[in-house]
Length: 271
Image (cartoon, rainbow, N blue to C red; front, side, top):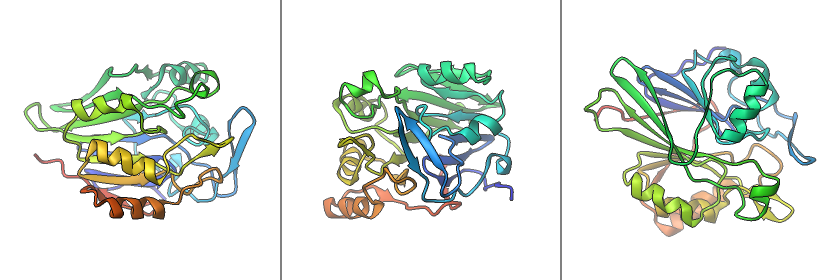
């Protein structure tokens, strides 16, 4: 069954995989299409089984203008994505991931260092993708055994004079002081796509739990937030329900939108 959401929507497919329709642009984030019950290799001998079924497969997707990939872990770019995505699709990602995907035959990888940008254009419309800070654990593991991570801010303008729609993609990050410049450079975020789940390996947090997620919302103050990456694999230990409670108890102004797989959120793009 083909997936063809309405224009100006974000559709949740599963894990951290979303389909963004922004005017004439179609973008895919962190493609993970494994089926429920299949195993994924995270790295260094760590494997985990998928507990959920994605809402779509690569063959169900419309033509893509780009993939925005936070990092090269198996639950963010899996064997199905490697096998079935168009080898010519632009992939905006870290230098580490771009290099490795290039070796796998992907011909249009665009490596981005922190604060670098890539601009997609169609007629007068543009999407500017800015790589922003992110890191898995904040420990020596980040440099020794874990792949580099890229957060990103997408700014969509239907015309050059339009005010931008700004969407923040957190990537698998923990809150840390290098994230503060995101709030300074992008003081008005319309939507934050939050990688939660509280992934834990050897007692270390590798993605945000409920308290981490609420801390980041306090820092960035987006108008809306969509939790993703929270119940799909056995390594995820922090239920999204805990995050919803934490946000409510802190009385944060951000409106949290919890999407079912295959459900779309309308985005306000006329500004």
